[in-house]
Amino acid sequence: MQGLFITATDTDAGKTVITGAIAAALKARGINVGALKPLASGGTADDNGQLAAEDTNFLLKAAGLAEDQRTLVNFVCLQPALTPAVAARQDGVTIDMAAVISGCRYAGQHFDKTLVEGVGGMAAPLWEDYTVADLMAELGLPAIIVTRPYLGAINHTVLTAGYARQRGIEVAGIIINQWNEAQAGILEYSNIEYIERLTKLPVLGKFPLVPAISVAGARLEGLAELAERHLAVDRLLAAMEGQDK
Ligand SMILES: Nc1ncnc2c1ncn2[C@@H]1O[C@H](COP(=O)(O)OP(=O)(O)OP(=O)(O)O)[C@@H](O)[C@H]1O
Ligand SMILES: [Mg+2]
Image 1: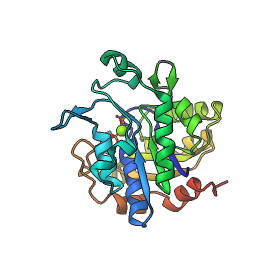
Image 2: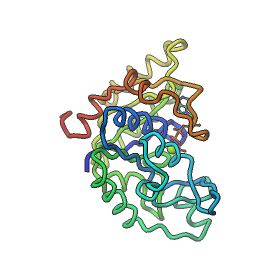
Image 3: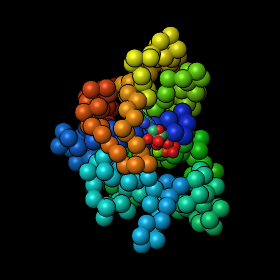
Image 4: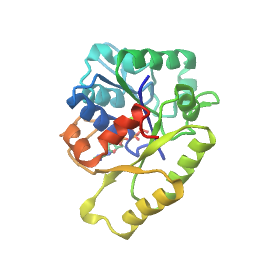
């Protein structure tokens, strides 16, 4: 299975936007790409009473996949907007992590490149004591850490990279999301400088804040072009193919 696992410093950092942007760029390059959200919470019932999550809707659209491919990219969808282990307990649902892992592996055979979006950050519990980091280690894909330029980002990003290292998870690089070039100053540039210095990982892009993009509204506004312009797509591809070492 070739691809990337997209994690972040925290929930709302922009994992879905960045996973969607990379997927849209690969799709535009003619690559058979899948964008997975194996476990989602905060789902709402569709017309047939089936729970659907915003993240899955956005990723299906970004990768150019059809509605009937939803079960190929999302295996657990829970209603409470809580970390899956807690949302499942709340709803009296059992999460079968072995089934989630085999769902990811099956998708990995179906697509030439498979992007997997996590949940929250690396220590978020998916089921009982099984965390995002456990799933990352199990799948063995190189990881991308999504972060944002704000006060505190150095700390959160360095801790996340350190935890990945401790767990033996290879990190291909860091992507800064919601970059505002016009307003970037000492805080934003020193974030990048110190994140690279302390993690010894490359920043593989500064993705802009584009108000027209919306995960909730499934609005993808020029996502592929934005990815090509602001992300190191060739380096991301090389990482997927294990050529960046
Ligand atoms: N670059 C961007 N430009 C505009 N809006 C953005 C951008 N990045 C993220 N957002 C918005 O910020 C919110 C959080 O982004 P996103 O859903 O990608 O985060 P996440 O890390 O996937 O969160 P979760 O942990 O819930 O999966 C969303 O409403 C999204 O539309
Ligand atoms: Mg998301």
